[in-house]
Structures are given as structure tokens and as C-alpha cells.
Image (cartoon, rainbow, N blue to C red; front, side, top):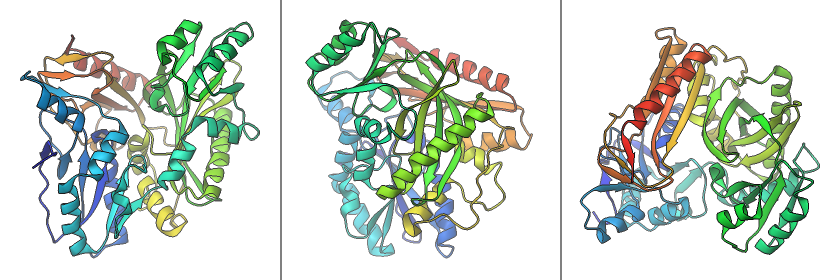
Length: 461
């Protein structure tokens, strides 16, 4: 099958399918979305198939199709028998999926039988042109609004008079960036944070102390830059929410991000250790942002990141106009603390898109503090070879249930480990660790155990 690296999907005409396009690390969100659709269409047997870019040794997932032209091209060029796993940009991946003949033939077969196909994504993208087909509908925010609101320069320009935003300037060339940063070094003496307009996970950002830092990071590239005063801080809270319409904003909760070297996101922990008055303010600011998104027509899940300095001042960092890294964990948390049959996040998003409102039995709950969870994204910093394998465990949801019900005091799992004897290119996720416990200490211990387990499967080239 040309341009498909792996598939185990067999179409069953007796089922009603939706399509997920995205990475395997967010595969579990689809199980919640499947249940939401099942409520909406009780007379149909709902299932889904997933198109993913993740190249693994083996797959313990149902109905997946693996497409990754970066790895495919490497295989064609290389005489090395060792397997390779390489991360691909979302633009390359969505473009490849959109032009794949097998995918189009499969969609043709499905919509002949069920008349329409819903598409679900981690982040809506205009590069997934499949959603422009007749009878194919995206459940999520409008892709062009997503692109607009993920632009950090647009965010800061929009919000600077509405919520606390760090002092900042916009530069349109690299030369201007150097001139502006050098003129402010004495005043902004704790460092200067610089980012491109788009920078997921801190990939295109740096905390600069000298102009050499900027040359090393950006190589003199002329583009638009956002520079801001770096504020030393201990806390990096992130808030997850859903926009139902311009008035109804649902807040799932607040987690604390783990940020390394000032920019690099490695995971989150819940519940937040911040005091209630700070949590109240974070809810307030995030609702304000959600209502602005809603006025523009945004419908669906979003997140906002902040910092809290040593004097308890809160500053806005960024909007994530998409599902963010805490989404699956918040789905698992809410499932165990909301009233029975109350809608979870994917169901809220489904109703927002289809009906411009939330279901009537929507419940927002803030006191889910009996569950403590943490995540760790194990991303390799340089080209790496694996020398070991951790068997796949995909049902993170079950771990949350067992801890919430008291069947376990604590547990941790290593998810999406790529496999043995792989070359893994710089910046690729090797595995993801999730720890769930009844207290924070046991949760943190699980993260440490998981990291050591993963570290034992690699050596650096």
C-alpha cells in the first residue's frame, strides 16, 4: 500500500466511524469522544480509525493507519537496516494525509455507507484539506481561527489591556531584535524572553542573556519576533477550558507545568499547588480569554498558560488554541469526580460545534483533589539509539479509575515507547510517563521511576 507504513484497519460497514488525525499520545481522547457520539447516535455502533505519524516497533492500538513521509524517505535513501523513528511537523503530516490516495479511497467507501464522516483532531489545521470534502465535517474549532489565535504577536496585541501581560515589544527583523534587546539589557537584567510568532512547547523560543544566544537560536533569520522581559518565577500554571459560545466558558482545572531552561515543556502535575486566591484569578482570566475567543466564533477546547512570580503576581504567557498536553488527563480526572452522565470535555466540544452551546446537564467541578497525577514527555535531545523495549500499555484511563476507586494507592505507566534497536532523531518523543496516586509524593515517585525505566532503554549516538 503506497505511502502507508502500517495499517491494521479493516472497514466494517455495520459500524458508524469517525476519523482521528494526530499523534498517538492523544489517542485516548478519542475513547471519550466515541462515547459522546454514542449518546448522540444511540442507534448506531460508533467506532473510529486513527491516522497517525508515529513509527513504532509494534502497535497495540485498534484501527490505525501510519503515514510519515519523513521516515518513508529515510527508508528509501538509507542502506542502514536499523529502524528509525522521526518526528514530523504537523504541516508535513497533514499535507501528506490530505494527498494520500488510500485515505481518500477509504473515505469514499465510508461516506457511501454512512453519508457523513466526522473528523476529530488535537489541533485544527488548514493543512488538513480532507475537511473540505463534501460530507466530511470537522468537530473542533475553525482551522483558520486556530491559526489566528495561536499567533503570539496577535495574542499579546489583543490582550495587553485586558489581563496582566508581561512588558513586551514586537520586532520585524533580526537586526531590529538585536538592537532592541541590546538597548534593554540593563533594564531587563534578569533576561529577555524571545519567541517566534508560533512556538509550540517552547521549540522556537529562548531566554536570552547575550546577543550570542539569539544568533545561536535564530541564525540571523528575518521574521517577526516577540520579545518580553523575563520574570524569574517558580510556578507555570496552565488552565484548560472549552468555549461553548461567547458567553459560556467551561473550565476543567489548573495544572502546574514543568518548564526546563525557561522554555522547554516536559510535563504537568495536578492538582496545582497554588493557593485558592491565585486559582480564582486564573479561572477569571481564562474565562475572559475564552469569551474573546467565543466572540470571534471559536468553539471547542483551548488552554492558557501563565506564570506566577515570587510576589504572587500573575502574568499571561500564551493561548493554546487547541487541545493541550493536559487534555487526556483532565478527561480521566473529570470522569472520576463529575456526577454520573455529566458531559466530559469531548462531549462539551461536540455540542459547542454542533449546537453552539453546552448540554443542559453540564457540571463544572473544581474539587477533584483526591486524584494526583503527573506526566512526563520523554523527548530525546539528540540523535539516540534504543537498546531496550518497554511493552506498550495504552489504557491510562483504567489507572485513573483504580486510584480514584481506592483499588490502588498509586500506579505509573510508560506509554508509547517506540521500541528496541531504533534510531530516534533529535526532538522525537521516545515515551510518555503518567503517574497517578492518592497523594503528591507517591505521584512524583512514579514519575521518577518511569524516567529511570525509559533512560535504561537508550544510549546517545
